Amino acid sequence: MDFDTMRFSKEHEWVKVDNGSDVVTVGITDYASGELGDIVYIEFPETGQEVKISEPMGTIEAVKTVADLFSPVTGTVKEVNGAVNDDPGIVNQSPYGEGWFVKIEMSDKSELEGLMGKAEYDRMVGKE
Amino acid sequence: MTNIKRTPLADVHETLGARMVEFAGFWMPVSYGGIIEEHLAVRERVGLFDVSHMGEFIVSGARAREFVNQIITNDCSKLEPGAIQYTAMCCENGTVVDDLLVSAIDGDRLMLVVNASNIDKDWEHIAGFDRPGGVEIENASDGFALLAVQGPKCREVLHSSPLFDGLKQQIDKIPYYRGFTFEHDGSEIFVSRTGYTGELGFEIFLPSVKAVTYWNEILRTGSDFGIKPIGLGARDTLRFEASYCLYGHELDENTSPLEAGLGWVVKLKKEQFCGIDALRAEKKNGPARTLVGFELEGRNIARQGYAVLTDGVAVGHVTSGAFAPALAKSLCMALIKRDNKNQERMFEIEIRNKKVPAKLTPLPFYKSRSK
Image 1 (cartoon, rainbow over the protein chains, first blue to last red):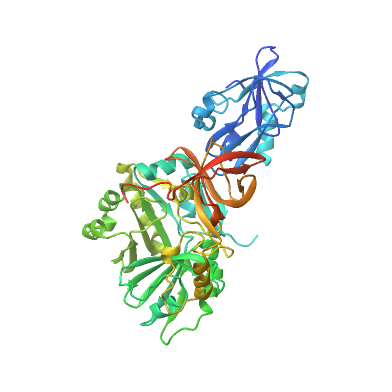
Image 2 (cartoon, chains in turn brown, cyan):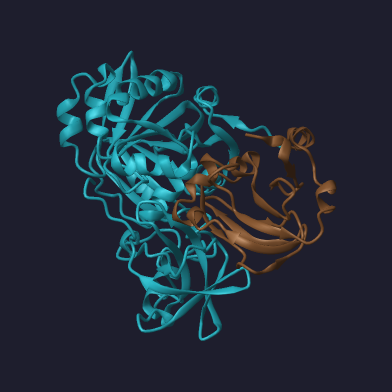
């Protein structure tokens, strides 16, 4: 996993930046999927929906609990990973790979600066 | 935070890498890997549960049945040695103090198996009743460990273990809701064909000091049958799918056993038991609410407390809900006003400001072929 190209939000989302593109891939962290336990359903935003940094854009239903899905950046949803709802288990198995959630076209790339690197995120969850 | 109790197996669970939480004052495993995986292991093969947090009260004496019968809604007066009965016990107003098992270990000893979260409350409740001469009550909860072996392969697992040598006949023949005792190393062990999963299964009541030996041995011999240790997470989804009541969800001191669908354990022809007058009156007029099952559209989960609506009006609330792993449906149980139970009616469940259509579906949701 190439964590160097990834940024992390305090709400436990990861953002993968593809070579200077404005479109980033978003998912939840290994820590978050572990804390939630078995995930059974993701209520995704619609393609084309405008989302705002740190605001809920969907919900994550796990067996024991439900959590808001926050957007880590501001922009427009370009794609959602439909495969996740065919087999939500892939979020627990592969949160950084097959279990990605959405692709968002960022409207303000400077927001990435405010997100954490992997080491800083790990420190945060270590403390939680 | 008061002291969290550890069952005799808490260290073993930690070593197995279980995710542990405090539940009803005990440090308990929620899951060892994934709840869904554990759930399906019990439905398809076999699982081993540590449920040592459950409480055990021993009532002894020739008139033990007479004593217990004034407390419970069911009738244990004719409970033969080895027979087991599910029952509720109620407050004077007919609402549920707890649901429990009454097991006749032998002619003059009954074991009451109560919910962990209610041990202290139940003990106080029971101690408040007059005891006929010669009847003794003991809260033996701390001395007992309780293991549950549940799933279609459970008999094979027990047969293959030397700890159950010579018991093959009894394990094969014992009917549902019966138990037997045997001796091991000078200790008495009670095995019953009971459980909380909706599958064929056994529960093993044994002295705490023997818990680790039995746990490890059952896991070892069970490995040939694909056994898995199962945490409280899957215990809850399994009981939910089988539509068993869980105290604090379907049952509490605001709910009567008649509302919760437990009329079959309320024996109103008995001369007396705590709550009988209130329950007779309730039965006459019909309970105000009734426990029903719903299947939801989509895959959002209806969780405890969510409102049930019909024509936009709240008519009840969800008591338990889950995405049922073996049925692959979003289901819930709910207490609704009885006159609304009508198959023709459209219902909605309010899930975080969204109204999700739901249709009535009979309980239990799941019926095993193995049980």
